[in-house]
Image (cartoon, rainbow, N blue to C red; front, side, top):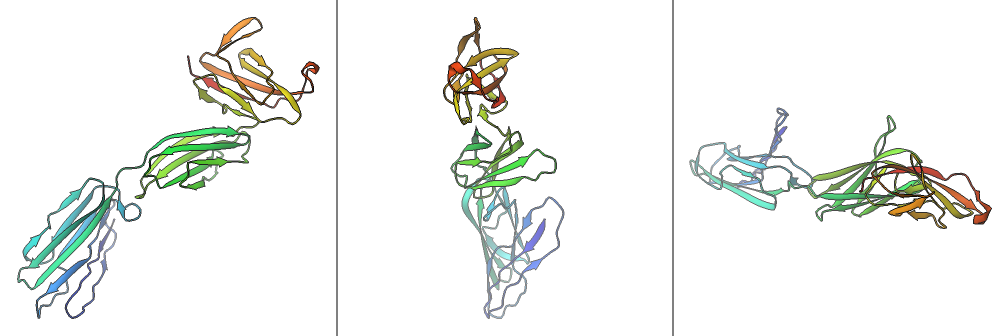
Length: 310
């Protein structure tokens, strides 16, 4: 904590004000400030000390906003004859600006001083209700849903590689961010943070594996419905062979496009199947030439998802 005394003095005769700072105090206290004040002296009066000192205690955020309860303590540096508005008070409710004013007159009535201080208080962080990630070939697209008081959104990307430093990859007021040209198989952690006018923050983090040719569902993604499996188109492919495995192969399909909706139930090699809770792996091969030629290129890749539905 630093204790800061900043009285602004105005006298008849033009005597200037002063600032006095003391050394840092014990850890845990936050700040003490003397707000701007006005002194009025009787003719011939003389004094170098302010009559009133205002000490403020609270956590100061951004842009002049406080982000915790604020206590205003008024004290007098000389005996006084009268005062108004000088009761100590703690402000606990959020406010865009509440003004407190203390006026005191010295015992000999030669000096009257008034101090006013406006407090802006915002203890309520914004909300970040959801972050949705869609995969692409060597890429991710992040979407977030934040409350209207969030003025800035930051996206930080960190690699799980030892010694890697996190980087801010997005900062702005938008609702989406697409991260591209990533390394296939890299493990990354994204932290999305909503920041309001006072500097209050709300964050959500996601750990992801950068997809290759097979990008939806994301590697290891948990799904509650039969997923739409999607992959990067392969040059020259006329169709694809998609195989779904749980212990053994339970589905083989030949879509003409680069996606396949897993059905709710199906028949494969005389057995009826449907998704049950558990881990499933899937693979895709490009079909070259006509379907009857039965010619395939190298496997595009393999991925997995976790089915959590009934």
